[in-house]
Length: 139
View 1 (tube, rainbow, N blue to C red):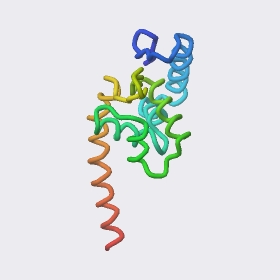
View 2: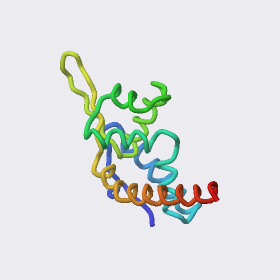
View 3: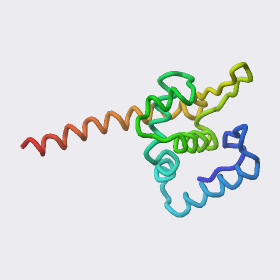
């Protein structure tokens, strides 16, 4: 399976050249690993990406400060970079309001919303596996 620009979500901040480079990287990873799940893990991996997605999903749309309050330990730089990455990947959208005072809100794209059935299943498995491991510690 490979991707082309017609199948990917174009974001406001990603040029066509950047999108082509992203797609080329995804196609290379797919050829290297042969495993689509590994690509998903590369896209969603890291300490903060899934946490940011979860915070944004819980509130429909939220500002930088709201996300930061929900993620103790994240630095402003790391949050900025994580949000930028998620926007470029096409999982969240950044909407700037030119009001007084100006502000920015983040929300999930359709692609970001489509993650939730999988996230739900991963969460169920994780809870079950944690209980399984606790059985070994107690026994």
